[in-house]
Length: 224
Ligand code: DC
Image (cartoon, rainbow, N blue to C red; front, top):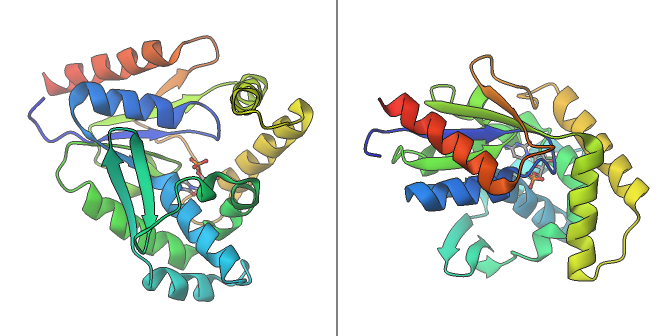
């Protein structure tokens, strides 16, 4: 596909956005941009610096001194924070349970969005997040709002943990996912919300390749 056509994939935690976005990007030879990883990297840095996560201005100051790179390698995308590989560290429970608070601050979001728009400038990128279609790239040609029931999203997360040998409690995971949805969709600035012109895909009963195929079809239609 030659025309400039960024693809925005938004939706709640655990709907399969990143796996789908990666696959779509691979099939179209587009750049995959994981915007959640950027907020996670800042959260990791803020926790390590012992900052008060309620203080948006301190977080913004910290962010101004950080470079966050999404480096594409054979094995996947590595996340570099001032050149330090923090790919695994940003997925810990501690980061996950604090990232909604960190990402709720307006100053933090404005800076992140600026960086995300620059990364997407080539016009051949797939971005996944919460506010891509509504705020980061309101002119994206393809906008997807990917959902799945809380039950199903918790089940997927639980299975992921099982596979990695991490012990976890299904009901607890479900509660955490519902809590994060609530924080992300009720924050004042650029909350998680379906864009009016986004296509909604419910992935509860679909496989990842099926969802990716639907998105690619839509992208091809838009190109015509
Ligand atoms: O997609 P994820 O679970 O890695 O995202 C982590 C958090 O970052 C999510 O709970 C909310 C925030 N986020 C955001 O506010 N805006 C984005 N575009 C992406 C993520």
